[in-house]
Length: 68
Image 1 (cartoon, rainbow, N blue to C red):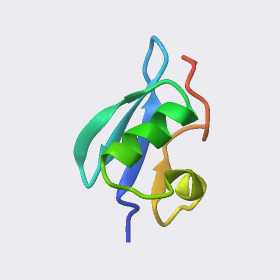
Image 2: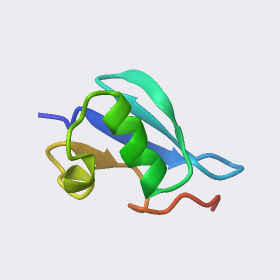
Image 3: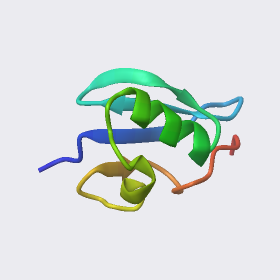
Image 4: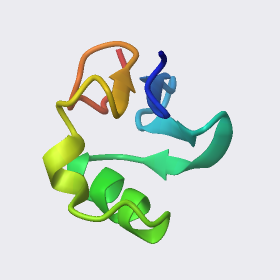
């Protein structure tokens, strides 16, 4: 089963698109922005799930947001 939250590869100018259940939820530039986006989407205690592969799939390096 695929994780419901995907943090996609880096954008050319930095930052990452986040999808929740295949819907674009937003664009983030750091872990704090990701936590806030997830909380607005109804994910409680979002900081706990950042490294849980059942919840979040990182495409590319986890916790990095700068352009390659």
